[in-house]
Amino acid sequence: MQRRQVRETMDRLNKAGFQRLARKAGVRRMSGLMYDEFREYLRNFLVNQQGIVESKGKHPLQFSRTRFARVIRDTTQKPFTDSEVEVIQRNCEDHLIQLMHAAYQETQKAKRICMFPKDFLKVLNDRKLGKYADE
Image 1 (tube, rainbow, N blue to C red):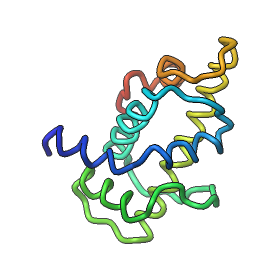
Image 2: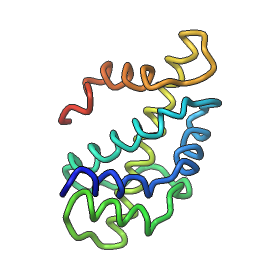
Image 3: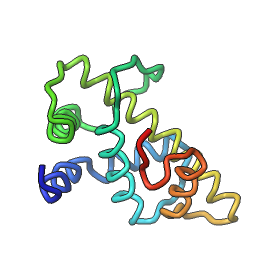
């Protein structure tokens, strides 16, 4: 798949969905650069996802199910059933909430209010995910 097509696919995950996830993680303010960082990380997470494991989270989904299903289909190039898509979506959202929470804690340690990409990247480096290294 061409990089441009992947980029357009990930753009379907809108800013509002990421903002709702951030609020669940306790984030008050984010830099506008964070959304592209989240999209890139999420694309990598979907590509590297090994199997479908039931998520513990029971929160309502923050992204449109049809948009997310299209992103999964275009990113992984594999067919999934509706229930599998929901499980993958819950896993991705739970994972992003945990990362956002940890990144916002880094922001607070630095005595700032607004979360920047460097906070998110620091959390990924601490968790040995580097610049989206294979998990």
